[in-house]
Image (cartoon, rainbow, N blue to C red; front, top):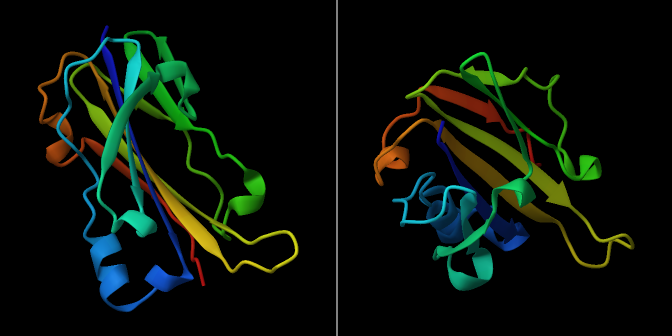
Length: 157
């Protein structure tokens, strides 16, 4: 069965924690139209504060995306890996994996925050959005509402 993966990483610093920059960051899309690619690839989009949150897309091997995908009993088990653990803001226990039936898709969001080891550079942040569909899909599948939405974001302070 076909598996479609889109991984969006939005990254920023303290400069985009408020005001116009934060509004622009918060307005960034959580799903994009899929260009044609090979089935074993993942559509990867990066949006950085330094580029005004303009999206840049590329393709990577699906196995390099930090998400666990396993097919069993006619369903797809989806669970993003949390990398690195020290970047996680406080949050309750992680939700369990999602099991998708053919024709379903999930949007899963995780956020992170980091400081330099010596505390010299300020905080930096990123938001990972994983859009994963099971079965054949149209190019605009991730522009609609997902079958399942998991918001695993913690407070960033």
